[in-house]
Image 1 (cartoon, one colour):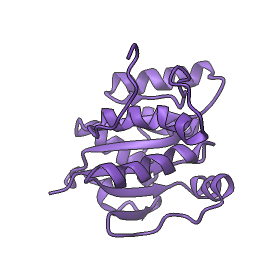
Image 2 (cartoon, helix red, strand yellow):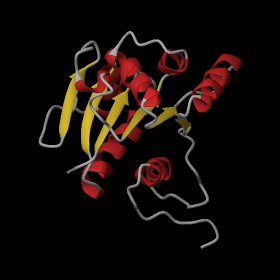
Image 3 (cartoon, rainbow, N blue to C red):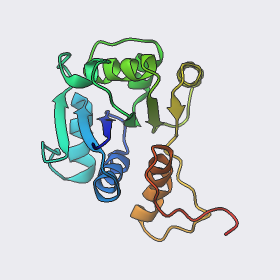
Image 4 (cartoon, rainbow, N blue to C red):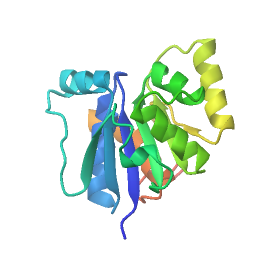
Length: 185
C-alpha cells in the first residue's frame, strides 16, 4: 500500500520549490499525491514556471480548493503528511488560527487534529511580528516550519541545486531518503 501526501501550493512566490518536491516525490518515493492549488497558487505557477498546471495522473489527484467534500477534508481519510509549499503568510495565518474556510485550511486542520505531519514552507521576507507569532502558534500545535532558505555551504552550481537544498530536507523529514551532503563530510 502506497503512502499518501497532500501538497498545497499557495500564492507565495517560489513555486519552483513545489515543482521540485513533486518531481522528486514521484521519482524517489511511492507516495500518492493529493494536490491542492489556491487560486493565486495557480497564477503564480504559470507566471513563474511558464508551465501548465499539473493535472490528474496515475499518482496525482488534483482537488479544487473550494471542494470541502474532497478526501483531505476528513480525518477518516488518512494522509501521512501535508506540505504547504510555498506557504503564503495569508495561508499561514489561516492555518495557525484554525480557519478552515477552504480545502487547504481544512486539510491542515485535519493533519494537526489527527497528529500527522504538517510542514509549511514560508517564502516571505522580511517577517513581521504577526508572521513570527503565527509560526509560533503552528509550532506549538505540532506543525513544522521549514523556511525556503537555501543553504550555500553545499556550493550549489545551478538553480536546481539551490532549490534542492530546501526540498531535500523536506524529503528527509517525510521519510524519503535522498542524498544530502552532510555538514563536515
